[in-house]
Length: 177
Image (tube, rainbow, N blue to C red; front, side, top):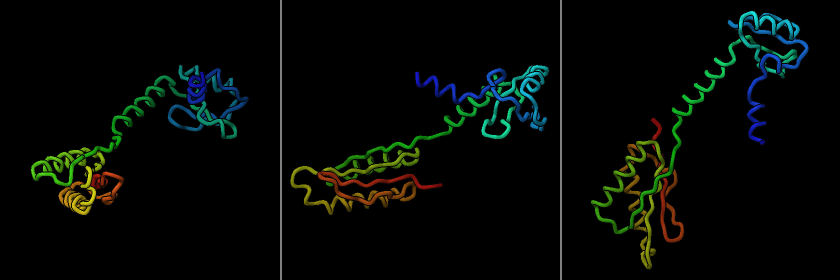
């Protein structure tokens, strides 16, 4: 129920829904037609077979425009769709490994991270420890710094390597073009 009310508030008032004694009217080409009584403004809009749309009720007197409301609404929705299409939501992708990783496996992780960074996503590089391996956190830190160096042309370190319990992690973000 609340959703409908909010939607109703977002849509501008048109024609008979406008409840002000006098309004400032703007023509179809953006020209000022002056302040007039609401009935006169409605009559002017009907003569042109268009709608009288309330643009701003904060002004004194409120501002209305003569336009095709259906076409206007369609254009607004089209702009919103285009903006949504161009928008890229950045995700955080994770690359996991152990500090005793072999060169080939390391290269695979680096190429994965590179692909994620080029796609515009952030990368969380994680080194996991098991049992007593936690004593070798310096080797894990060296591995993460090596990865940062290998990826420096496509990404930059957003968060330096740090230990959190049984893992050591580092955040990389795509480089600004």
